Image 1 (tube, one colour):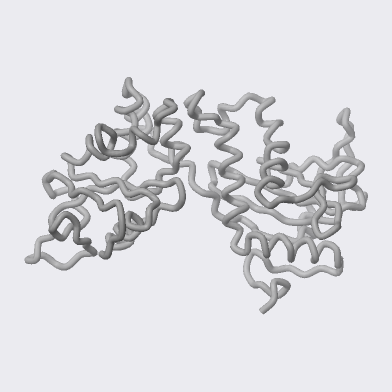
Image 2: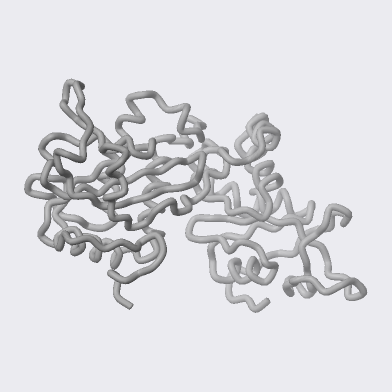
Length: 317
């Protein structure tokens, strides 16, 4: 199967050879869209700047910051995928000029007059829906709505969005954990007065979910935020007496998460969970062998017991 025949969100063949050449190149760079999605996640987090501002919600951005999002997406995609500068548009991909347009509102891409006749990479992401899309369209005058804004930028007529050749459509955006926590849990986290206490509460309340580095940075609001997750006085030490372990992105920790049937932390992520000693008289559960004993995920009825120490090297569940 070639990239032109791929099923699912990347499906769609058109009669524009340049468009299909660009599409093929982008799909080779990110076959499943994961790299592309991470750029969008990181760009939104960059705008929120949680370490300094404590913000986690797109709606809290100033209008000028939201306007700047398109430029940041363009720059960060170029850095990630090493696109060269275009001669007339933003990028040169396979020798073809490609413009890049981002909108947080689906269909809201603002197309400048100079893009007519060129290919546009159209990108959309919605942090509340945790979804994103990216596709390519050859811009033609008849596809565009009229407009009277000062810079003469136009939008694509709704009826012609079907002409977009999608690379990835309605794909899962890495979760903004703080945005999607329950209001009561989020309030409990941010009501703590110190960065360490806020992080302890985050790992206590957001168990069995991926917690990325930006969430940690936003909650801690301190430059040494990673130190405050580790042992020796950090979250791992503070929560151990409650039976909570915190797995990071090392191979050994990912193996523990897999053994307990938990989400495996990816690069820069953590997963916390409360565990208890396995009871051989009860129905078998996914378990791991740590600190000389077998451990399983604790239920609400299990009393807290001191959690095992996690290995720093190789691990076999």
